[in-house]
Image 1 (tube, rainbow, N blue to C red):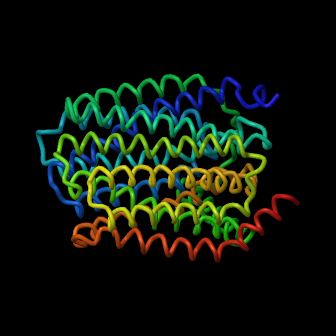
Image 2 (tube, one colour):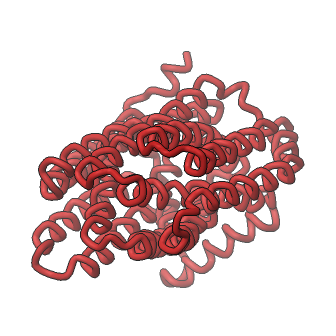
Image 3 (cartoon, rainbow, N blue to C red):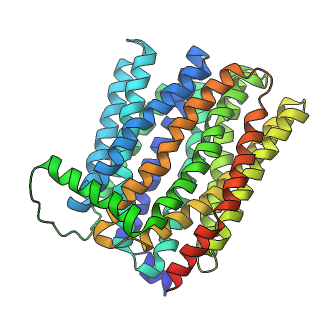
Length: 419
């Protein structure tokens, strides 16, 4: 019965389009920063460009949400996937002809900016395409499928990059974005055009004001969980995004070609954790209560703590590498469970006519912490010397404290949903 309600043609086309598009995105997000790190050897430059790449994403999240509520969501996805294919083609033409640092910075900024406008359309499509009682299952499917693409992307990207270099990855990503755009043309997403009063700037300002007003005044639970979610991104996710490439390619002593390949494998293993998190969210969708959320965050913190212990206590590079992979995979599994919970609660707490705008503001707060964390950790790993374990201990401790003090918020969410 659930299958007939959830796995309809339009929802499946949305999911398949996401598989292809996210796969293309993941091989790029693996290869482009690593290519820059190999060329420059600077973790500060690596972290800074990654951090600044998030800025247009954050700026475009609210705009993307406004557009998602006022324009057919299918058209948004089609146009942006085609645009990404064109962007990577232009990068392919220019790479090697101009300085790699500004070229990489501009490309990453535009790539992440497109994602900022793209993701609100995808997220806002889910509650429109499925029944309300299936939203958590639908979110778990979308996240799990995205994670599966994230597993395959870096592993294949790592092999291609270490053996053939950057160019084959650019070819593959262009093909992925083009194919995803063509597939998305055939999705039918119910859409009712809204009346607009005033120019685009007046409309945009009014919609953003309405969204934040709803979050902070009518549903304060939304901004509270967004800050808790954002804290986990700042302290934990940003840490492994910077630490894994720097440690594997520069600090553990592997030869560069082997290190690049091992880093690709690490992406795949970590993304496997996210897949398992999506599977668990689907299986446990009726049992996964809000009061469990602080325990998930504590589990994430303990995973990071284990990585710090390995860096301080172990001396064999491969042993450290294995612990980093297992712990990061566990972190992503628990973080994915938590993320699906938060996305579902946000959708259930928000009226459908505000869902696109509120999602974008929610994501803006949540993801806004990642570039800050990347910038900080990039600087830390450039100057920390042999004390690479220290950031892991500090992040774990702070996250445990936040988790303990957040319990009352999640009990309030559970009470609200049960009403």
